Image (tube, rainbow, N blue to C red; front, side, top):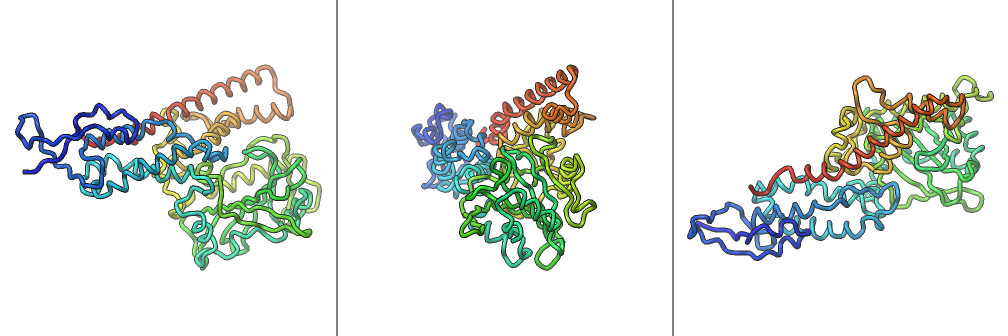
Length: 449
């Protein structure tokens, strides 16, 4: 008969992280005392956690920090917000899992009780590392795969005619019209005004969505970003994919000697999946400060003045196209299941964000994006049968508030304010549930009775 070392108690189980491991270790009496138990747990020499009780204390202490549910992607402040916490995760959580890999493999209860944290912690680190796209492959490998032999040629290269049109908005829009590229100059969901341009490969292997930010609504500044998202439909041989694949790149635009060039930095601070759990997001459904487009070559009206509200018609058309892609196949770059539980259970969010038609809202889903969609754009809201989602009635009132076309009546002002209050309340519930939902998810399986 053999014995394992046993913790002298779990008084340290609520201490912070590895400090929970500093309790004295006692040798069990191998049955000399009636209350002693012989445990089947097998501990290795390299692992500081010797009993199931030690493991339970470690996991409980590790997950008891709300930093786990804070996102940094939209603020571009991962080092400032999460640098110190990330270092602790890497050294104390992932480091412990590495030192105890043999113990995890030899003890099924430990493998079970740590499974979710072992999946989530590396994914969390990826979403909080400065200079990373946040995908499973490192940036260099992620970018290289976009131009490999098995993907369509030219998929990640913006049209040269677009580069030649820089930097003036008028020239960019003219190039789009003359080349048959649907476009829209509109307010961006992350601030400022941008021109969105979309192109389709002649053989329909892929589509490109590009956007450039405008300074003073007129000019693309030197050194600014051109974001490119490619929607891959087929492989290099022309074989159709079961689901579209999305590929992200942020180019820097550089002007020299009267020409513009693309620079592809390997570092990248935004986390694409955090803002795009469902794939490409729809454009803001209101006129905002700018909403401009015109028919392009191949469309009725090309060359003529655009009809009065053609910009909004184009916006609606582009949104229908964006929604038509469905949920993308991340092709191993992201595993959504690694990013925590589905958020918004009490609000019914998983009714729409079910992981089939729309991506699950998880812990990695950017807080700023959620606030913008729920509170500022009045789009997402709590689910209820027969309730329109997006909240089209509220969006229409929001649009008329900014355009005064026609002005809101007093009753409509009251309805809009009521909608704002309801959306804010939904958002506050969503935020309040993030940490307790994640903590309960991470601790669902116990290491010991």
